Image 1: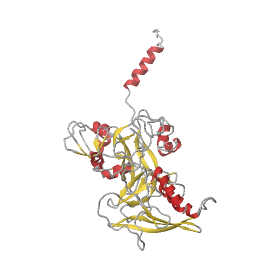
Image 2 (image 1 turned 90 degrees about the vertical axis):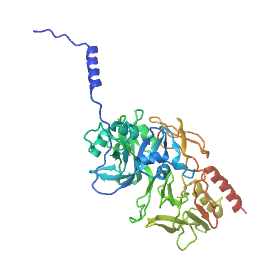
Image 3 (image 1 turned 120 degrees about the vertical axis):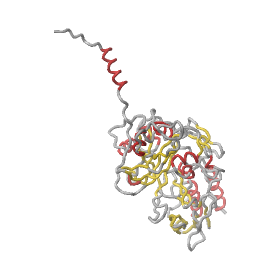
Image 4 (image 1 turned 90 degrees about the horizontal axis):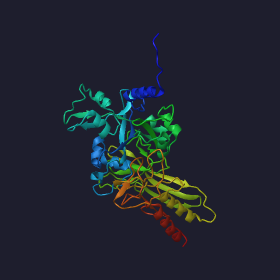
Length: 440
């Protein structure tokens, strides 16, 4: 009988490590939503710039409007030539896309890429599109027999991941962002960064546990404001993520979603374009105008609101409501009416709306940001600024700053203000002015 020498622990460990080193890498996972109809929805891609690019160049990569790209990231579009502003490498952006149903699953099929010298499918997938798509997916989508050969100028269909999930998350309006997991990420860190929970992310992405790995693509639900425009409107189902805004009606109207709100607030856009009438029928109010008048029951609030874009016409509606909150005994009804107006500016708990804070077009990255890289989210205590030069976080959402020369709505009639201000500081000043005015 032959002698069998026992294998030492060190030799066994070496063999295991060699086997692991030569094992094929595991394929990153991606959340897939089955579908069976032709409905579309608005969705977002979490994308990190691979080099310095103009806003228009980034938009061209995804075949979207540069203005839509900027507004989705809360960038103030009133800056001169903002579409040609150069965005810094490694800047994290939210890319607005249309999510369709193709081959039985949700995906975006509107992106085309023109091959350049030295491009490979791997470089296009990994570098240009940041891992949002794989080389195999591009190969399959284009029916390439020899993926190693790309002709300069060859047009490639780039299928990108997206999900709709009926535009809701736990019964509330939401828009979903496809996010590529980084090596330093944890599921808990991602949940904290995007104001959701570990359980919600696990449910949405059908995860059996919190384990994720570099290259996985997650669907992240972001709180949003959903429109109720009629189906025949060209901007039907417009959905805006909280803290950002969108331009619609041929660049004539901008609709914002204040953090913590679920209702769109729309007003005339700041872009110099020719637009149809924005005046509410049978009233002197224009789109975005609000009138408040004191009464014995509280404050009567009337407003001119946006109702959709139909056949080149901006639909508006004249709405009236009564704020019946009883003011404190130390506050007169007139002063309470003034308080309600300030709340429309500063965003108090009266159900009011305001335009969300904007940032100047980013020119540099800053490691300290409102949302630090996962897994340890932290908040910055930096103050707001209106200077043209701004810094932006390397990942997560952008830091909010007050608008510079940004668009504003207006108030009118008794107990009113014109041109609501973009910062809480100025709102407080306005409140003090109103306090003096109503005391006489």
